Length: 125
Length: 125
DNA sequence: TATTGTGTATTATGGATATAATACACGTGA
DNA sequence: TCACGTGTATTATATCCATAATACACAATA
Image 1: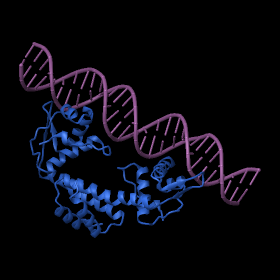
Image 2: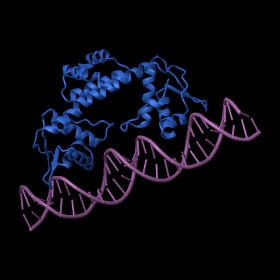
Image 3: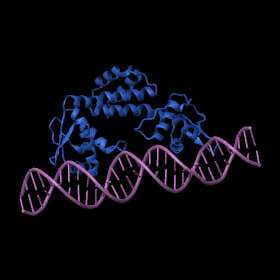
Image 4: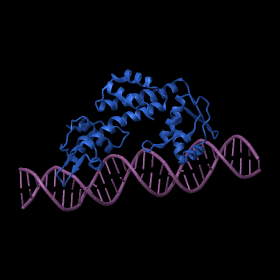
């Protein structure tokens, strides 16, 4: 299930990117499956209290990335096959970890120190 | 020592932020210490092949964050005291780890899985 | 049939970022 | 002295992001 009320927007990344990422997370968590019918652009905009044009931009990138299909004015449908799922998984887990490792090494954190820090902060919030 | 040639700019974050972050990393690594004289705005701009105005913007935030002091046209000096060092350390390590944990939890990664992934990718590059 | 909601498109405005081209006052050094 | 590099400031342009206000064709539905 998608519930855009639970999506807390940050002021760092473009909003349309955050929307696409949210849907990807839900796909990875299998809370959204193949054939899922997405709310309309205007509905999502109302829930997030943003402009419909921004939502439309999110749909544009999701269509370009292949996991959302739209035809006519019949709304948009989530499409997932094995390749797309793996690509999303790659982006949301392996890529995330790799970028973190890169940043950690930038400030000379050792593997040991990193695991210590993660252990220390994992439970808080 | 600062060597802006080694700073590879990404196209995600604002350039002036990346410059300030680079100097902070060098401070944290103790490669730059209190009293270090920074290259001129124009010199850094030439090395990074960017506009001097962008470098000036980086100096503005570094001065506002308190670890760079400038007087007249005598160039800029790095200033570090205990508080500033701790603030930089907080930002570049703890904050980094906390944000990573937040993202990992967003996609339901367990502590165990995270440590596994980091172990798997730590050595590569 | 007529209204409503849909996806889509266009135009305009504003802020943030980055570049470009200057300009000016000030110290230093040849 | 005087040219040079310095920090600083200003104006203009361009792109990206987000908003605002419309407009239009189409499908479903009351």
